Length: 198
Image 1: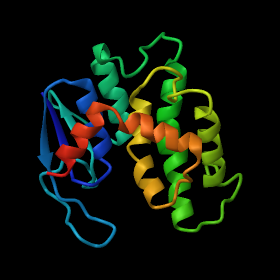
Image 2: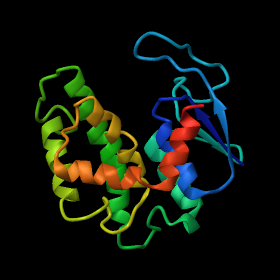
Image 3: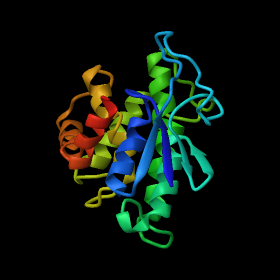
Image 4: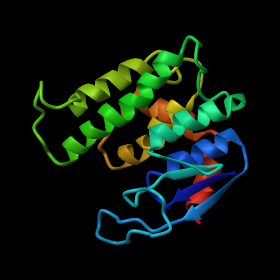
């Protein structure tokens, strides 16, 4: 059984979307989290060690952190075809992009938000503007991060990009706008929005 520990309007939206794409039965346990505006509290029912979301329990195994959950789920449900299997040509690119999200994209975004001066040779990530250039160049001549193949990478990145664009943090260039339009047109995205609003 799959159980997602979820908070509305939070990072767990992406895991909820991925579960909708996979199509296997799951249950949602809504938990309270500490929010940036000071609201919310840590929920004792949440198994995440820091009281965050997402956290996923699958047949008794706890998995947390968005990119780890994405890799776990696509390996556990290969028939959903949302991630290349070990030995397939795109597997290297797949695990690289998942790691790039948590190891480069999110830290660079946080540094930009906090107005931290980037220090080459010290920070393990690139400046946000350089990261955006890389994303734009990657998507310039392909519909998805893995080319013609929609994958969990698109869920992980795409679950954040509409919000970042609406807040004018991510530039609304034609390439990124087209990408966001493609991924948010998926039926599973609409179903996730409806569930996240409840």
